[in-house]
Image 1 (cartoon, rainbow, N blue to C red):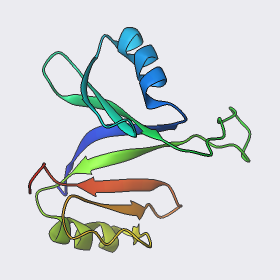
Image 2 (cartoon, rainbow, N blue to C red; image 1 turned 135 degrees about the horizontal axis):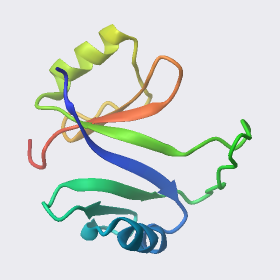
Image 3 (cartoon, rainbow, N blue to C red; image 1 turned 180 degrees about the horizontal axis):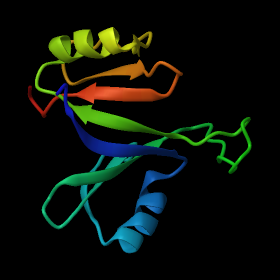
Length: 123
């Protein structure tokens, strides 16, 4: 095992507004809100879905390949360097500008979908 799914992250123009919709739809509550990134958690306190501000957001259109879906997975890992070696061996690619030594790194899967490897806060 490399890691476990932590959060599904959804790009949007206004995290506060979209989170309000999902709070009601999924019976979740706010865990963290920076204005640019907002996390909703379940009753057990587990992060479930997050919303990330994208300034030039273009809404996806179902079945329109020029306006694809806009979300990515956050995968919780114990050690970024170890997990990085494992995902690269599986065919992932580290994206430019994502060489953060701690916290998180952004990759794309073998066909180009982005995902992040993240560590617990302070790790």
